[in-house]
Length: 541
Image (tube, rainbow, N blue to C red; front, side, top):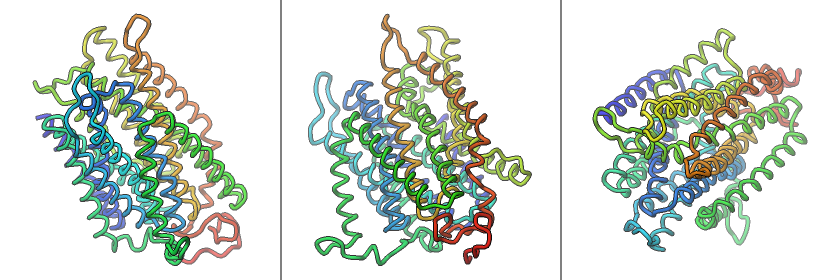
């Protein structure tokens, strides 16, 4: 009964979203469904991953959280490289296609689970290395796909189109439709009938996403095409073209990720190196190649990007420590039936499906009346709600009393507050990145957005490992950790709202008036909008 209710709610949300999309470009439908199926595969697998590691391979919770953190961190490091390759050579559409092919292969390999590890034993070498290769293919696939499909959404709208934030919110609903159905269907199959069935279904979902994207190419009307096809075909080394060098680099990168994903510390070092290099490169480009207003907008984007490190460090407890807490410390009986743990990870996505269209309408309604909060203010509201979610769960657990299971209603409440916080930050952030970036840096900035998500996931693994520790008397520290991070998030969110006027100034949004979405705005020597350098000719539309 519970599964039917959740599935029915998700279906109603899909219908509501499709109804709202009727006034948007048809290309949004293609991107919506392609990303929906990609997220079906990713979140279906994510809902099972920590459970699979601890129950099938018998990893300790600390080791499982470490591998989960390394995996999710790499998932968000690679989009920086994917964004740069798309900006300079491939174009976003080809990058998304390559990513989808890698994802299909990776999810297919996840279906080879082998025999369960027996207590005191160790995993079969061939099985565990196949598992690591599956993770490597998925990581590389997301690196090509994640940032670039969001960039194509931005190319469908002018920078001042009032539908823009709403479009990203609707696109975000598509992401979460995939997440909801993935956790419900793949999660249920994996825990009930066998891990390989859940992982296999996730792979079928990714294949469906690839088919939708390839067949829907004409509706994109040229958005995301290669910026320089001749450069892509140029011979570079040993008679190989740029395209083939990218393919060979992808193969080498997959082998490297296969080796490094099992080492959390090495991944964190790579993250710090990639982060420092990326920030230095963007700062150089902003200072030495951009006009003053465009430079300020890049710095505003970098500030917003930094905020989400904290946000995702706390939010991503969902797939790790909160997943285990739900399994071990929550009364999961609903309508007289005990619900499998992984299914609860669909709740956040279902909330977004229901609330996303309402938020999209609210931003448009407020925007038309000049009352819409700015992006920094929305970020502050999002972080506050994230912290309140943890505090509500701690309150509910304490109310139940030591040694008693936490009532399941508090899992629904923490996901509700995390969802409303996410809707104030994540889709708004995606929209802000495409608005604040220059055309030649949009893939790089979008990749950096996801790189910061990777940093958040790395910190999330450390927080999750802290929840697995024991106090001096052997007591669990999970609620104490949740309380500490909850109050920290509330304080940071309030601080963001206080300093938002300064960030608003750096964004110079009024100077974006009438800019064409695909124009090369903001770079020295390129045409810009009339509000930035009066007297320059407006780009042809």
